[in-house]
Image (tube, rainbow, N blue to C red; front, side, top):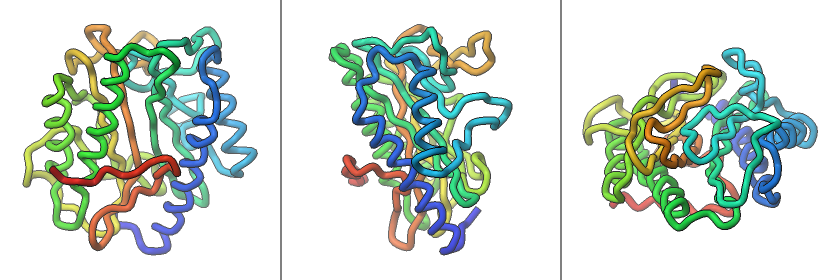
Amino acid sequence: MVKTPDELALMRASGRLLASVFEMLDGLDLAGLSTLQVNDLVDRFITGDLAARPASKGQYGYEYVLNCSRNHVVCHGVPDPGEIIADGDIVNLDITLEKDGFIADSSKTYVIGNASPAARRLVRIAQAAMWKGIAQVRPGARLGDIGYAIERHAKRNGCSVVRDYCGHGIGREMHEEPQVLNFGRPGTGGTLREGMVFTVEPMVNQGTRQTATEADGWTVVTADGKLSAQFEHTVAVTATGVEILTLRSDETPMLGRG
């Protein structure tokens, strides 16, 4: 759905607030915290400091404000008081925020302490894959261009891209049209238009792209037990290219289309 300039202004404000949540987390030592403690910290920050609403809480019956996905967990990890973030982990925090009726969605994979070189490499590949996808966003481009760029980067680096989950349109609802797949063929799929807003969120695995869902009905893991990493931003199609609505102050967009 194409957003009006006024709607985009509100989405831009929500995106800035969500970026500040990650900037708060960047200043913390996550090692030793339970995933539920991280959830509660974020809950208090969004509702108290930012006077906003954590959009995931209550969505589809989910009880928490974020997904906390460690190591071999691909996505939708459920916060747990018994799950302690440890030195050497990688952990993805996927957070949504609603302000004045509009939702922003973003995630980042944190490297905890002395993670292995292989884990650090995977995180770099996943982050770069996201930027490769975002770099394709401009009026007249196709959704398949985004997915192709993401998967090509992952495969060139010996990794796989999860196909069971994807990016999505976003606005007044957390999940709107279109679906933004993390694979595809150039020149195929829907055509991007100025004012469209959606997420780009590749999940990149060390091994197979196959996944499994655990008994809680939420937690998605790699089928082979190897590591997975994810990055996500909410982006808007502008007249000349792309605006990253959830960009953090420490980030420099890598938007070369090569």
